[in-house]
Length: 258
Image 1 (cartoon, helix red, strand yellow):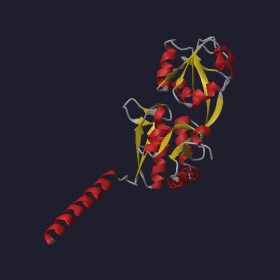
Image 2 (tube, one colour):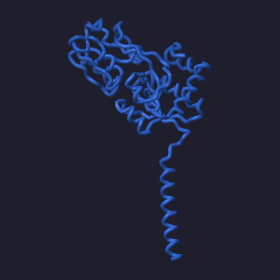
Image 3 (tube, one colour):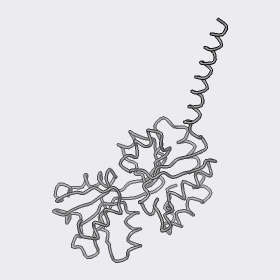
Image 4 (cartoon, one colour):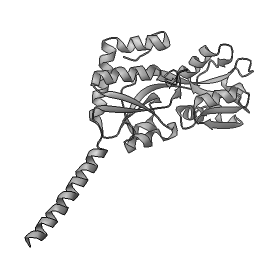
């Protein structure tokens, strides 16, 4: 009987150790912050000529992580699946020109807005498209499941365009515009102006914008503790001038909302 008890206890102890080891292997490091990004979203977050991830949001996130005493890593994701990536726990934050919308508020927690933006229409410099009404009968491109799609849907001209093509990222959409497979692209203004500065004389913006919007940082529902820690760090970056300095570097002016 005594021998059987020892065997049973040994089995139970072994199972406990296995469970504990498994838990330890899958436990999240509370000192690390994994940020989901679209790595083709210049100038917010993108890869430079050395294939390194850079941008305004990248520098802003690093500075916030330093304030929080956390190690920041960046995880390129399929932007169409951004909320799923967050809710699954594979990333801790969505932080890369992430527009605050009522629909998204139902899926994630948001920080306070930190940057103003708008959805605009980009065409080729020599295009005869001058106003939104001129999009009637045209081929339009935009990033899939982005706020550009929402902005176009709300525009009166939406029902008059010939077709709308969706792309995994803005770079591909602009590439099709340059080869004239598209007549126009609906895109974030900050992104449009970045590419216009890099390829002078190639693109032009319509004066009419489709929709004003604001960027925020997405946190998983229920994780108010992380949200509050992050917001405090952002507030401190505003107060000590770090946010303004990063903005000056990327935009040539202080665009950060206070």
